[in-house]
Image (cartoon, rainbow, N blue to C red; front, top):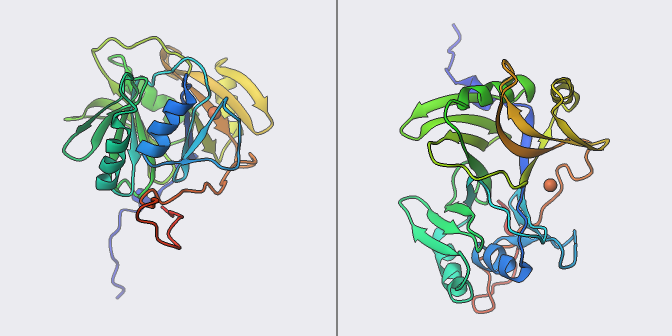
Length: 285
Ligand SMILES: [Fe+2]
């Protein structure tokens, strides 16, 4: 008689989205942005894709922040990042405290993370290794109006073909969308006033590229046919009623996009001029 072990096989399932690869937030000052994202958070400026002083890509494990230079955009919620070591992060934040004076930068130690405000007020929460990574952007949480989570869950399940579920517990009522192996895009219902949408966006790579395109096109939701490998949409609607529930621009890329699975280099942020050791420059999450 064979002995069968029991596993939850559904925990291994992948949805249609393979990576929520970047979050794009415009910033008015590159020097201040570099101090925050590179010197403070310890991330790596993409050394290969250069935009001069007009844009800056910041590598965070297998994800990125894109920071074109323009008036500041503000993410309507918060963004979770994982850093290799929270104590090292605190030391780096000590270093930027003074030059950040006069900006909206702030830092506060919480139970399991460090709550940060970027120089323009974005809510970024830094965790130590967890969420299946030691460096990355494991989740982003958007504030949405009451009674929208169920419709948002339907939108991602039905149109984007990626697993989504509505949860309602101590963390509040929210739609949780699975992105890749260990990422979540969360839409959390709130009674608070939600600011107008200012155009910040995120990019996803999807395995089934044409299916969601057809479903979005049918509803008139495609906002840009960027090129062969990319399109964009912005409205999140309830597929059953067509009602618009919230807005967040998605850059949708196919697996044929030239940048899919790009090898993003990450430095070891613990290396410094004072403690330098040979052979430890690279960090592999
Ligand atoms: Fe983008």
